[in-house]
Image (cartoon, rainbow, N blue to C red; front, side, top):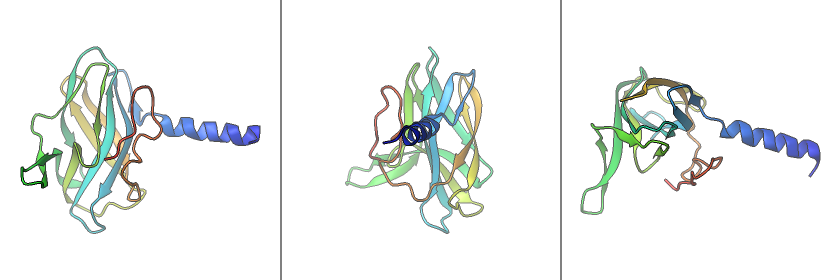
Length: 165
C-alpha cells in the first residue's frame, strides 16, 4: 500500500469517527442516523450513541423535531408471548456519568410519529434532544435508508463495541 493511499484511508477513518456534536455541556452525540420503515411510511426512527463526558449522571427526557406530528422516546419490550412491542419511555433514558447510552435498532430509539413528508436518502433531520442537566442539544441527523443492522459504531473509540441491533 502506498503512503498516499494509507494517508487517505487514515483521513477517512478519522473523519467518520468524529462526533456529530460536542460542546461544553459534556454531552456528545455520535453515529446518528434515521430511517423510515417503508418509503411512504408515516413513522420513522433515529438512532445514535449519546456519551456523557461529565462526572454527573444525566437523562435524555425529550426529543423534538418539526418533521413529525409527535416525537417520542421509545424502546422495545417483550410481551410475554414472544412478541416484541414498541413502547414510549416517559421517564427517558439515563446517561451515566462518564458513560454512554446507545439508541439502536431493536432497542431504545427516538420515534417520529405522523411524518409530514417521506424520509429520503441523504435528507438531514433537525432534532433537539433535551437532557435533565445538559439542557437542549440540537443536532442534524442524516437519513440513511441503506444502513444494515450491525453497521452502527464500526468506527468507535475506547470501550464502545459494535452492535448487532
